[in-house]
Image (cartoon, rainbow, N blue to C red; front, side):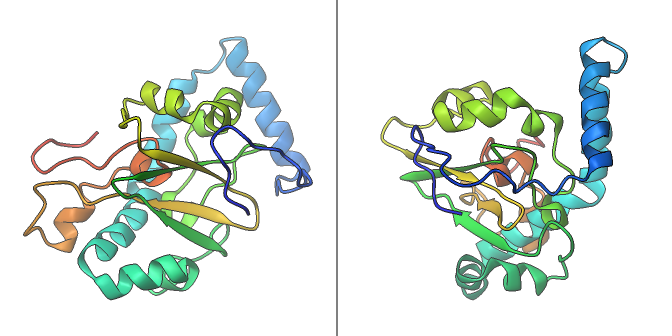
Amino acid sequence: MPELPPDDHDHDHDHDHSTLGEMDRRVRALETVLAQKGYIDPAALDELIDSYQTRIGPRNGARVVARAWTDPAYRRWLLADATAAIASLGYTGRQGEHMVVVENTPRRHNMVVCTLCSCYPWPVLGLPPVWYKSAPYRSRAVRDPRGVLAEFGVALPEDTEIRVWDSTAEVRYLVLPMRPAGSDGLDEMALAELVTRDSMIGTGQPTTPGAGSA
């Protein structure tokens, strides 16, 4: 998948990258209708998904990030061949067959979206949150990434470049956030506790030591 400039997503590729089957599409449509009518609470669904992610998905991604922060050789491998580097930690499976890791730097911030559905790296992030699947996020992330980040509480310097990556059924992205200040001396396990789900999507930052979870 080519890199997307922030405000120029031409959509010149075909639009068949969703892997949703007929039943999944029906469930998605039913969920949308029920939420619009007020019969289900999207926040409750989010809470359920977050619980699932806490036990399974994002912890795996956090361990990948923490390993990259502490092991320069692993970081280089992760950026060169994310699929193999992530698999070496035991995180493989459906929706994670082809991974690409993009690294945040002081001059560049990366952000992930799936513009047409909800392609997401399950082995390292679990199930996608409701907002990731929403039409407003999917459309605005490519048109106004800085504005979307501000709504997530991420304020970046004006000269920081923002790159938006469009996940597909073939390629799933994971953001390698910058190691937070004050984390020197922490071991890999402690560092993993600082890594949030959103920081690996690019809509958040890792927590700083002593600040608690975001």
